[in-house]
Length: 197
Image 1 (cartoon, rainbow, N blue to C red):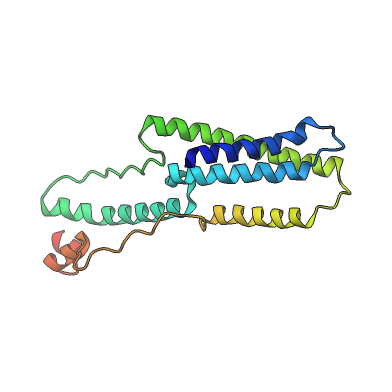
Image 2: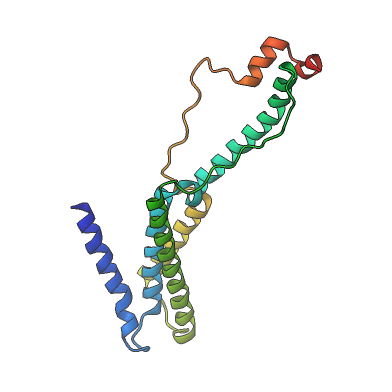
């Protein structure tokens, strides 16, 4: 039922977007076309954020990047110590960054298709805005169009800064958790590297 309603809503929006393109240049409301195209692009971006949050959700991507840097810093500090303790030759093998796209090939194809559609709607919106400036430079937008322009700008700003994320923050570590670095300090003391060397 929900999928059927989404199809009807998308078809209705496409008709409203494409209808002005088939009319004469003097009757075409280029600003309305741009606003409708931006709306479609925003919806597709939100769908992409659900399909591949590491690629399209700025908040999730920044969080994962910070976690990766922390893991690398901890690894570079701990692995040489462990190698000296167990008398093993140390070889620096950096951790591979996480793949921002899902492993499922079907999901990847869906992401490629949705990204192509989003890029198409964004290009249509830019073209419509250029036409509005070129062919209707003296036309005053309506109050509702001005409000919609402000809303679209705010949404794009929230998307760019990660404020549109729906992904929950990771839960804090359970009580009593002890990381490897703290455990080594408890076992070998604070100057672990000096004692092992």
